[in-house]
Length: 335
Ligand code: P6P
Image (cartoon, rainbow, N blue to C red; front, side, top):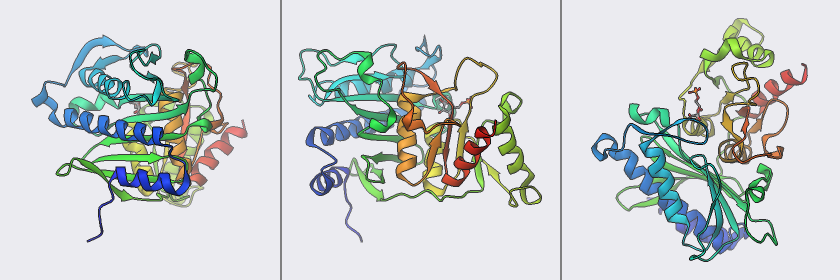
């Protein structure tokens, strides 16, 4: 039987090979993985742990927070604040950035996360997940401010997610491809189960919330209509649809077997560019998808090239199999 490669061994060996993982970044990734294990334990307890349901509070997005949203946020903050690898953190669940307290050593990295994505699925036992993105603190920056976080996604030094589903799987890139690690609960460690993940360039599967169809812009409507026409239509093939309403789960499927995921701008709130957040949802997922040979745009521009204007800004997201993303993006350019 093939030897099990733990996340720790993988990171140490990668550090030796390509220098993409300096020791402080390796520590950061191991701490985040340990935090995800704790979150997985809390999620798996569900009703038995008294962690389901609403926390009767709202986050900066104006969304009702679930108890597990707050628990996951606290786990990530407490796990990362003392290690000396971070200068500050930012979370979907916190209005402003979190500076590492002065009682702890300051590091050179900035960590951003959606501590529990897909929380509307928590109470109905559907896969959810943690998404994270790592940036470097700008050189010579005295006290870290929100402005230091406002870097394009192309400047990430690491990105990943942990999906809490039938398996708990950590998916990670540091810029040399995508690897997947499945939690071995008997050993209590993440074990390498997929390396050099590749997304097929074509697909027959799209993921979008169809209930919003009447609100979509014309290019998105055209693309989905053509998919629905199937073999008799311009695409000459039938399509399947999936929508889990957990970006982590939908992206994991796409990384595993291909597909296109779309949460586009729509007319419901025309002043909002989209629903999903750029810094800690779209950017990490887009880098993972590109590292696996896929593509990610907002319909007009590569997501990783977008210069953020504010920490919690939203973006239209079209990502997945390269040829499909390019097709949807080309429909936008014909506007
Ligand atoms: P809707 C979860 O709340 C989330 O941010 C993503 O994980 C998911 O893809 C999307 O929103 C689901 O949105 O409008 O279909 O409930």
